[in-house]
Length: 240
Image (cartoon, rainbow, N blue to C red):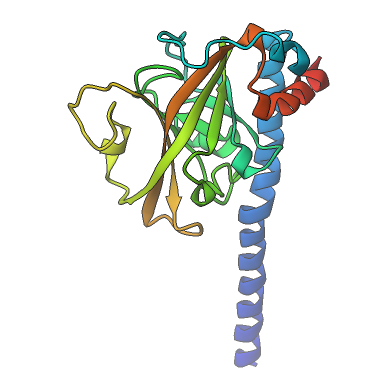
């Protein structure tokens, strides 16, 4: 009898554990994705009209201007940009929100480290995101290939960064957030985008860091880069 009771307890515990894993790896993604979609829709609604792809193609801006607009600091919880990474799929569209609190990362995808720069700034624009749960916004970070483009859209326009390299570090390596990553005190000369997430995919013993360098800026009036023009147009039409 005692063995039967213990067996039933173990089976029950196993079922509960499986349900918890399913909740972590599936349901948290469903909930977070819905909230992220809503944040993107609200961002576009506040943005107003975005030029259609064909209109944008008629008026391309300079490919690499000397000066680009830079947003001022944003409050924790405020979505101020949208990120597109074609390498992660043609529909990869994620909101970028101020702060890296649990509330931000668990619900709104990519969080901006407030001590780092903003899109287009000389220095380091650094973001954090989950790898597996709560939307799994950076699940495919390890698939980036040198030359891949990462596009950041703000109220001012589109900042295009080109992926450079990946680094695996221990969790205490906060120097990856320095204006010149891993070189605290160095004077920045480039506009860097840094993506940070947990490593390995189903663990958190390390951090995986992906670096990209800004290539160009397109003002909003010129429309999105060709690579994401159809994607942006579709979102804009759906929120019009």
